[in-house]
Length: 116
Image (cartoon, rainbow, N blue to C red; front, side):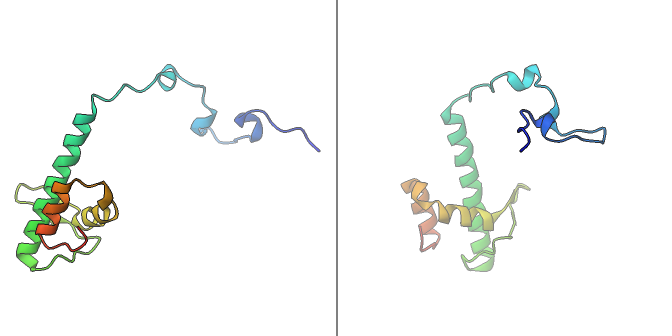
């Protein structure tokens, strides 16, 4: 039985010049902690903006198509030029509906989504 190698470098040898990052020594940057988030409210506002865009895209889609069934790959272009991956938006929100606020669920239900 051979002794087990102790480091990633000991485990295998590379013959090419470019070597994976796990062989590079740690730099000061990788040793520093990431800065703390500015606050939970900033993240909540971003999520709220995304929900608002998704809702606007859904309203536009329903007005044009007359239905709430959207393919997962569908992308809706808003009048301001914003692209919303509407199919992904709906799929994610349906799967995470237990985490939506009452206002968000009501807004989706008002548009005819039976799962909201």
